[in-house]
Amino acid sequence: MGEIAIRVNNVSKIYRLYDRQRDRLKDALNLTRKKCYREHFALDGLDFTIQKGETVGIIGTNGSGKSTILKIITGVLHPSGGDVTVDGRISALLELGAGFNMEYTGIENVYLNGTMIGFTKEEIDERLSDILEFADIGDFVHQPVKTYSSGMFVRLAFAVAINIDPEILIVDEALSVGDSFFQSKCYHKFEEFKQMGKTILFVSHDLSSITKYCDRAILLNRGHKIFEGTPKEAVDLYKRVLVNQLDEAADGEEKTRWDQSGEGFWRNTLTVNPEVLEYGTKKAEIIDFAFVDANGRYSNVIEKGSEMTVKMKVLFHADIAEPIFAFSFKNLLGIELCGTNTLFEKTEITPKAAGDVQVVSFRQKMDLQGGEYLLSLGCTGYPHGEFTVYHRLYDVCSLTVVSTKNTVGYYDMNTKITVE
Image 1 (cartoon, rainbow, N blue to C red):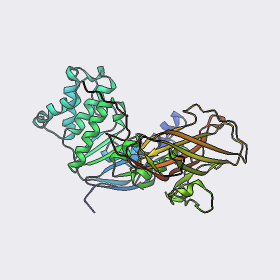
Image 2: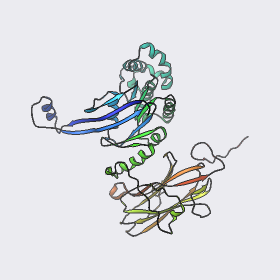
Image 3: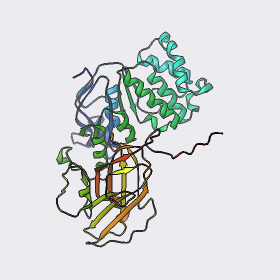
Image 4: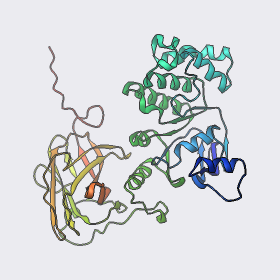
């Protein structure tokens, strides 16, 4: 095991919630022995450690405690119980505007923030050109930050955070307001930090970034840690949380074993994932699936550039008025690359009754680069206006794309070149 950068030990954060303002005053002045508040656990017994040099993501729904634990780690908040140990200089970008004086100019705020972190004026002088170059906001650095757009604000704040030579960088959703070029620059800086052996802890709703950049991910739900492990597994489990289909009693182990018995199934032509992540109400059930190549053969090996079909069969166990059928492809890192559904494609689906079987075929040209991909399938709907998952199969089987010509990235744009 390497050295520990951050240790969170049995941390809790409790807030008192009052129904009336006068109850808050009574409690503050000890005017009553009666308990006039409710306790809300923003965090409850949270434990984890982060090794030096790791990049760790924290994900979870709003109110799960993500920002709270970051504020406790950085000392902005104090825990109600437990303790946090940090080994290394922290630079944190928690909330837009945190630590900035709105009346000061950009330059003045750079010095203000640097001084708060513990740098001398001379040390900030040495880093000033790097900070301004990264922020790239021009003459606005001489204007009060209250005149900045949100994009300019986060550029300057992030430029300060990453150019004061931190050993630990903590970021909470701040990048979501930057433009795509700035976000690309920031993630490139993340890569540089990782290569330098620095520690990065960040919260993001961008699940692709969590999967791509993190060594591990921590999933929080209602103040509890419900999973800690690979980003791919954390993201898949998070998607269950989003549709309120998490069985917390399973302790994070939601994988089921697909029954591959029986003859005549299309899926018998495939190698099916024995630990496919499966969930849903099962009012509709995906009972079979296959890949079909350009020659009409069932095969999980498809030639790049050829026509291919993703085929699925769904059995309905209840009446469903407007089912939606979907598929998507991920790479082996768990990054979702492409996919579609019958709602996006404006395909009319007639109401289904219990006992009905529906076969849906998605036909397209295979333009993913040569490599290995994972198929996910779903049947969902919006009964009474509420999104519902009837059945989902994540990473149910693999697809091999064979190519004699790969281009840059995941997807071939089929470029035609003319040289004059």
